[in-house]
Amino acid sequence: MSLKRKQPAWRRQCKPLLPVIALSLFLGACTNLQRNEGVPPGFLGGVVADEPRAAIIGRSILSAGGSAADAAVAAAFAMTATLPSRAGLGGGGMCLMYDPRLNRVEAIDFVARAPAAPSAAATPAMVRGLGIVFGRQGKLRWEQLVAPGEGLARFGAPVSRAFALDLEAAGPALAGDPAARRIFSRPDGALLVEGDTLVQEDLSTVLAAVRSRGAGDLYQGPLADQFVAAAMGAGAGITAADLQAVTATARASALVRYDDIAVHFAPPPAIAGVTSAQAFAMLAPRWRRTSVEERPHLLAEADLRAALDRSRWLTPDMSTNAPLGDLVGSQRIDSLIGSYRSGARATDLTPPAPRAFNPATAGVVAVDREGGGVACSFTLNEMFGLGRVAPGTGMLLAAAPDGATRGPQMLTPVLGAMARTGRIVFASTASGGWPGASAQVQVALRTVVERRPLEESMDFARIYNPGTGSVQAEEALQGPLPGLTARGYSASTVTNLGQVNAIYCPDGLYENAEACQFRADRRGAGFAVGP
Image 1 (cartoon, one colour):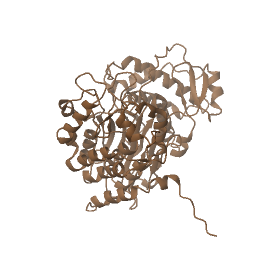
Image 2 (cartoon, rainbow, N blue to C red):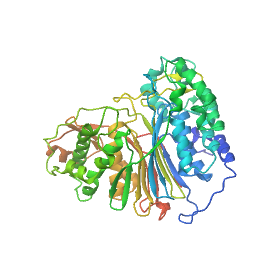
Image 3 (cartoon, rainbow, N blue to C red):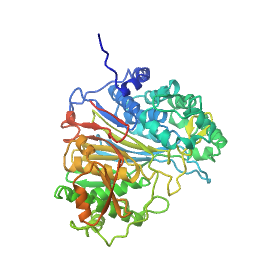
Image 4 (cartoon, rainbow, N blue to C red):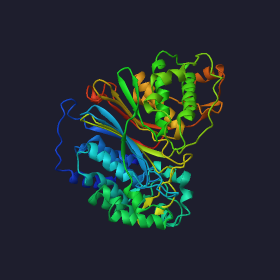
């Protein structure tokens, strides 16, 4: 009797990708793949994303000779079809891009902002931003990057575990919108579940227009006219002038140096980037000389101090009242951590009022054989945005930022590179709100500072200090809890403290590319595809 080995679930679900990837590779068949002598001949790079099909499509783009920017753009368009709860054409995001030719990292800000007139909906910026990312470092044809997402929307794709979890958590909010209910429900009216087929014909038509006429068509062209009429029909006051005003802006990152490594964090309005940069700057110089028993205390203190300082520099419009360089400079960092004592928690610091910003983000990180790297985070400013679809477009409307629970505050791309040579060492995104941002710092400490393997670093149990008087610790954490208690903390256990996806190259991307490690967090439902 012969036995057939059962295919893994992810492989069965990804079978529909074969014609989509074939189309993508056909469009790029004339692209020349230039060999870079600095990396092994077989190394093409890798991609990690919060949704498996997006990661696989990104890796196929690298195989076709594409750059990290190409891979990130293709993965992002794919996620608009497979993870529309977090990444959508109606939303926006932020990317950190490393250009190996210039040895430079820059942030591309394309968050979805409010239109000129008061409205519950934000103006879509995703396509504009991805067009700029492509224009900066793209190598393949634009059509090749949009086509896979278009195919997934048109022909359908199985609902992934990542999207199924979002539907389960927030799907009932879609019930009030007929267009959304029609897309995300079964024929009997129940919400789709993992393994069901998600078909989005209207979205595929929009993606086809973006593919054939370019990114600008959504902002000044026939597609723009269609979207304005549809948005008005959905009760969103977005005008043609609002679309024409959408920009993607290059900004300086929040930069922290550790030894010879420059670690770049996202700038405002992604305020989690500044908070994480401050925490990393406080922790990195002390991490290796701090005992394992004391480290949870050090982490808890850094979380609290960074959060307290955020209440000082954050303005109501999600910007800063001080220059970004000053906020992460040595003088400010020394003042924040100067009163730290290894034996006891600080009792003279008044915790800031807790602020639960929008945690619904999705990310992709990619590196290529030329030494390029991109880390992007996307959001609709709330899970499923407003929960309303612009009729006839398949586009979920993003929520307008309100300075409170809705907005792009938790976008968390991180890139680390050797300051002298520019070789990429670390690239990451995180989700899950403030616990996720704190977890990302902890993974960076254990890789960049301690040089532990990435999988081991990500599997470490995490802690987070929300400033409420009780430190949260994942259930698997053993040993250090007594150390926290002895220093005056109370502690509570939780199941999950954020999800982190990352790429780690211990010796830099060129020097030993085959040692690069690609991991999706076991706490989430993403996927990593390496060499």
